Amino acid sequence: MDIRNTNNSQIITESFIKGMAKDNNPTLLALNNKSAKLPFGRVLNNELGGANSLHTLRRPAKHFMPLNNSRINRYPETLFKSKDVNNPSKSSIIEQYKTYKEDQLLSNPGGDNFFLSKTGEVIDNNYDHSRITKRVGKDLSDAGNNLLNAVKDLGIGAKIKYVDKHGNIQDGRKVGLAGTFANFFKDVASGLSFGLYSPEGEVTPQGGAGRVKHMFKKIFKDALVGDIIKGVPKSAIHIGEDIMFAGLNAIEAVPDATIGNFKAGRKVTTAVFDNTQVVMDFITDAIPGGDASARTRSFALAKGLKGLPIINNLTTPGKKQDETDWRYVRNTSFRKVIETIPSLMPFTI
Image 1: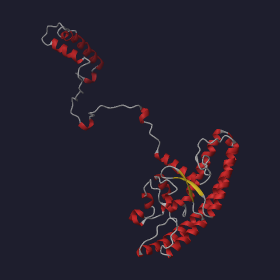
Image 2 (image 1 turned 45 degrees about the horizontal axis):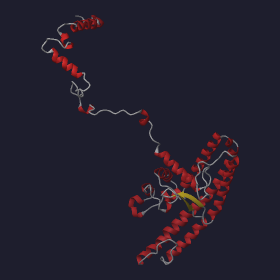
Image 3 (image 1 turned 60 degrees about the vertical axis):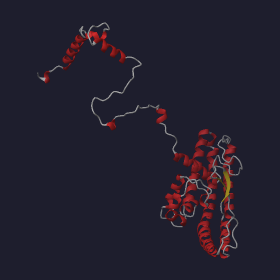
Image 4 (image 1 turned 90 degrees about the vertical axis):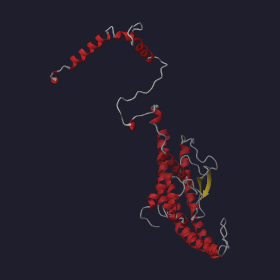
């Protein structure tokens, strides 16, 4: 028989005809006939009938060939609707950015829905921006408050708002330029007096060794490093920041008076200027001497290697908000990462 000349369709057709002929064979009809007299016909018929019963216990079919057991799913599969699987929850990075943005807009006047002069409802997301007088008035008010903060930062320091570790909005205050020099003289006096004079809120040292240690700490760490090397540049940056934000708020009055008359224009203006203020605030924080620079470059000798600058910042617990550098901001992974990256650049104070 030549396989190459074989007609497959003819073979299939002949096999089907032969199969139908066998089914019509009276001997095989006993399987479907309860009155069949063949010895095994009735037994097979009952078995087939029982197999079709709804009450028959089902068992999973076994493979007729040995397979790798690790490739066989021995447990039933559960199917879920696609809407429950393919739509992941919001990214935590987005939520952390919202937290970062909120902290930044609470530190200076300017956010369209932020009212730092209020004692209650500081963040008002339902504020009516549809009236031009309210929009432009808010911009000019923020510009004036930032200029006023510049004067305050020349003195004892401007007030700010911040979110504490319990999630409540509280009042805080920056250290102004005059306040920095005042702290310097207080720390020097406390050090030279071996703790006989201590600034308000500080614990008086005890014992001879404790007083000597206190002297070096107050004169070198607190007065020279903290007040002069870190404090003076930080106060100067705050003054420049206030003036810069005052200009940004004044500029915002122009689009608020024009395209702000349309809902879409108001949304665009708010998004652009709020995020611009956040970016500008990040830059002033991250430059040497800024608030972020003080956090990332701080060190804690008690922590060993983890207390080294930058490492200390990255290993600080996320919920910790008691230290001076972290008091007015929420310590999130997002903030630590974006503030640490500029610290790795070869800048020097």
